Length: 487
Image 1 (cartoon, helix red, strand yellow):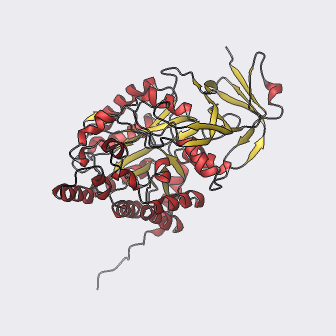
Image 2 (tube, rainbow, N blue to C red; image 1 turned 135 degrees about the vertical axis):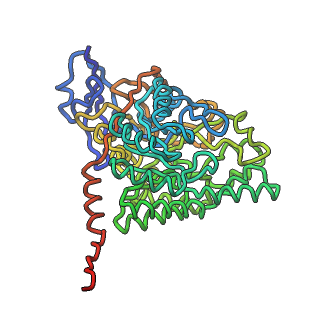
Image 3 (tube, one colour; image 1 turned 90 degrees about the vertical axis):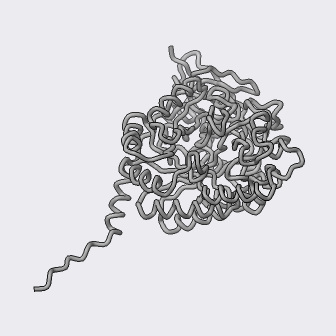
């Protein structure tokens, strides 16, 4: 049975332009865009009035952790509750992370995460973390790329004695990614420095959440970003750096991009708005609720990140959505290094960025679409299926009310966590309707989602880009000098 929906009277906003047009969705795809879309509508087509509103590609959050087992507990939002909350906020797709334990086969971990994600309410994909190196990792990376639609691999340069990837792992994994046409990504923090600073602070008697930020100064992130970029540069592989939180890391990315290197940067909505003063809050839980890595920074770093988005040196925005409730955070009450790292935001990212980006003039509506959807779709190779209002694209659409308001609160949000880092912020500019696969799931404050409706999205690799990089690498490689033995 054909299902169809006609969105009438809105202003379509894509990454390249905005224009008045109707949008016709049939059987989960966009079938027509333009003034004559109504003429193509089947009988009994449902109509949605978008007059005075924008029609945007659904948001893509390229960095979430649903149901993550971490630091002795499990993140509060599973794949159903987390993606449902995202839909309420205009995010229609996520890319989550498979994180194997050291020595665990990558394929075993991938199958486990795929099983957990079967309940997802929205479309999803996976980055797969490389937490150790061996022959099976080399082999599984190829299987994931060629058979499972994975085109990106994550590397944690932090979390010593747990999932940290040292330089040997980075070199081996980056090299394998290049062979396969996949994109390496890194969490850039010097894990050894963090480990030593944590010990020093605890020895000094600093046990509260303020110890978290003191043990992870910006230089720790900047060093790791520089090192990862240098390794990638020597090997000739592109690189994506997640949750860039400070000027030092952004400067490393900017230098690399100015030199013609394919380095991409992601920043989090929280890092754009929240500063490190939260860690000195007199209420222990309020301070602990903000513990994430990298931590929130002094205010001057926020403006640098906004400039990074405006200049194009940071391409994507995400949340690193990884929720832990008060009883879980309490595991570190007497030792900040044991506070589970993570905050929420998948429901809030779009509204917060519109309010503080578009409404302040920092971003145009098209730039907003670029950093919340299109760039992620292009970097992770699902464009124009995602990230575009165009014929043939998935009907993942947000009807955006620029005058609508929402007061953010843990009491009313859909995220399964008892704290919201944006608590008390009233945003102007909110989704009035969210469509996933052409189905209307969020309408005027009401959420109507189905467990298991989300699809796993295959992400192909980048053969054209990688062949070009290999050729460029061959040109950079000096030819050996042929010397003849003396007669």
